[in-house]
Structure formats: structure tokens, C-alpha cells
Image (cartoon, rainbow, N blue to C red; front, side, top):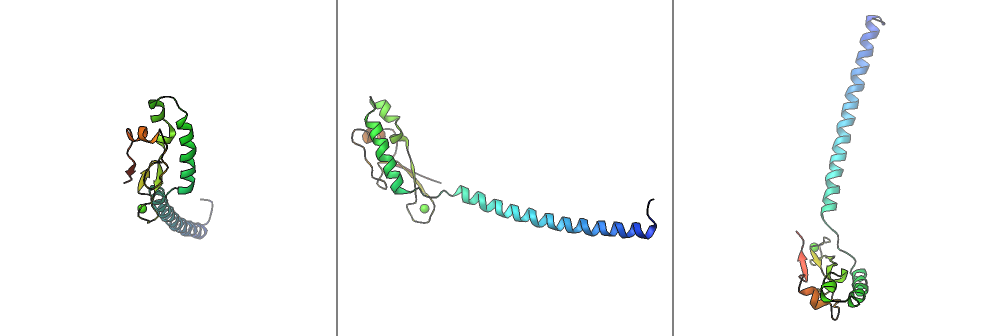
Length: 128
Ligand SMILES: [Ca+2]
């Protein structure tokens, strides 16, 4: 051995103390990250509602595009028909419906297009 007995014993005591401190720090860090991670996934899983004014404007411009498409099937596949907006209908801050532009919540009907959309899509779908 390199060291005398006493020095060697001191050194291994220091190593043990450092290892114990490191383990404690590691456990605290892991607990911290796991806690933060579960909060994060919870936040991601609950979808916030979309801005309704922005959604209405988007519906209006998508309507103009859809009205210029030729044929019912093209209108049916338009982004006006397919767009959905996350709506918080009970005011708890979490979206609970996916509404189409012409639903009662958004109310952007598109003459000549909405009835075609309604043959394929419901006005809204319930989330969860
Ligand atoms: Ca809600």
C-alpha cells in the first residue's frame, strides 16, 4: 500500500462521506425531476382553449378559399371543413370540445360550403 494505515483509513472515511452526500443529492435531484416531469405531462395532457377571435378570423379566410373550390368533394376536403378549434365550454380553463367553424360556439357559417361540411363532420366533438 502507498499510505500508512491511519492515512488510508482517513481517506476511505472521506470517500464514504462524499459518496453518502452524493447519493442524497442524487435522490433529491431524481425526486425533483420526477415531480416536475409529472406536472409537465399533466400540463401537456390538458389542452388549453384556443383564442376564439383568432379562430373566427381563420375560419373566415378559410371560408373564402373553400368557396372558390370547384365541386362538393373539394369543398368537403377544404381546410374550412377540417379545421377544429379547442373550446372551453364550461370555463374551467381546459378545452373540452373540438369545434368546427360553423358550430354554435364559433358561428362562422360559410354560404355554399357549411352544408357540405355538415354532411361529413359533426358540429363539434367532445374531448376526453
Ligand atoms: Ca372545460
